[in-house]
Image 1 (cartoon, rainbow, N blue to C red):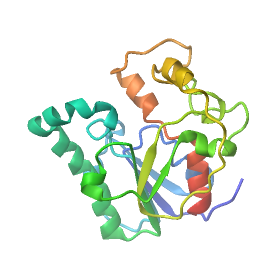
Image 2 (image 1 turned 90 degrees about the horizontal axis):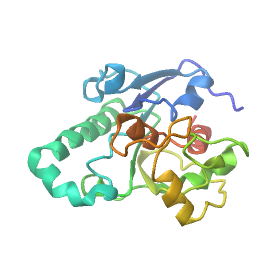
Image 3 (image 1 turned 120 degrees about the vertical axis):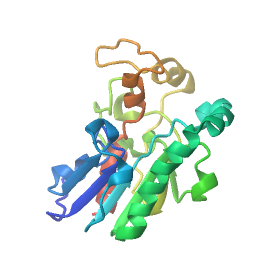
Image 4 (image 1 turned 30 degrees about the vertical axis):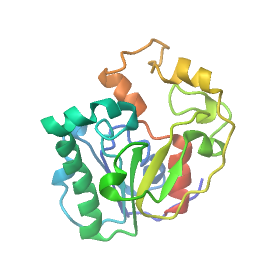
Length: 214
């Protein structure tokens, strides 16, 4: 494993699972996980010396998978609430000028407010960074060999892709689209546990990003 500099502060915003920041923490960085489920709000992070910022604001109100609900969310304030979190993530980067920063979100409409993304990937693009029997969660195939287009905005070095062949689309629809817990039990699509699973950052991507952005 690559050894990274110690005692450098990484702030990982909207990161409940801690997966994206895990390579930094394992290598000795000072990592702050900021998530409302941990009792802290990304909109209330105080400025200070920050080496790098990871941001994964909630995608529910931006993802193309829920495009049919965008109009209703615009009207009832959910879109504005989510944009306030995105704004806080970008504002922290502007105010602290870290060595690098990145904000992640899947295919959808966030580009309307942030402009074109800088980088795009599918989980399978980084499967080569994982062991042959490794996966980010029990719901996913080994080496995260599936597709889910995700984009990054920010100022960072693009991570090196080591792709694996994704499983067929019909298998993805039958297996990945229905999240399962560690015991293989199907979860309700809108359950908190299912949402947490869908928000997990691919391990291969996390490792590649940390290697390119020490």
